[in-house]
Image 1 (tube, helix red, strand yellow):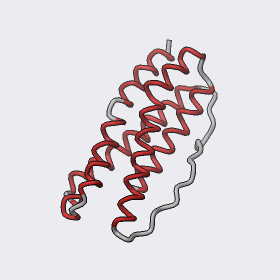
Image 2 (image 1 turned 90 degrees about the vertical axis):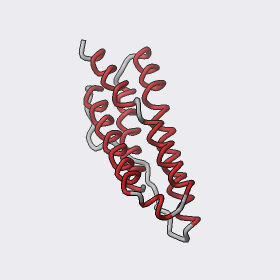
Image 3 (image 1 turned 180 degrees about the horizontal axis):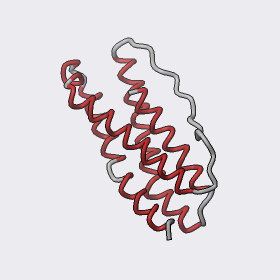
Image 4 (image 1 turned 60 degrees about the vertical axis):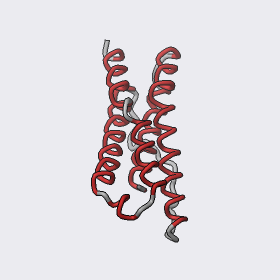
Length: 137
């Protein structure tokens, strides 16, 4: 789950960089359709991780704020990177759900957290690709 949080943090960072490079109207679209759901998923994933660790006496990971790997003046590059990070996080969440480990552990809150996080990011790649098409014109 810590890896999911890290990937979502990277997506947030990349979306922030993209926001800085677009006009105000596009920025509002980016914030509403991409940044808010990813921020919500990031917070949900962190909370799920921290609460699971607390319930089971495990150390919680310390999460550092992610920063963009490399700055690019082209917002499309940052959007593409955010898509990759969100899709990787979704893939990891799906693997955890498919593994049945959350069921074996018997932790309903963990299963709910995985599902809620996936639901929050489910539409983000499609919305980001749509925004990419608009920026490409």
